[in-house]
Image (cartoon, rainbow, N blue to C red; front, top):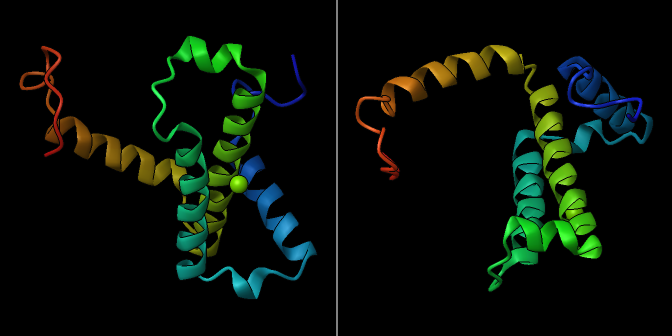
Length: 121
Ligand SMILES: [Mg+2]
């Protein structure tokens, strides 16, 4: 298993690594909320472009090493900008995650959404 994996890596590790990367390059002043949201959207667009007009299944993606590597790279880019935005706004990700999951459980109750029903409220 690699040194870092989802079972042992903390949110703090991600926040610290991204902050260090940004500070070492003198990019902090450019990491405004607007710039980070736009950069995040650009990276999400790059991820989306890899799948545009394709109907890949999970098996298709996992069996195409180049595609899988590119998708992983773009997912990481999206995540890195999201972590940078969280850093820039001094947000505790765990706290907002718990709060929003509670809201989502109420908004999309098991009683209403229990039979494959899926739509955005
Ligand atoms: Mg990218």
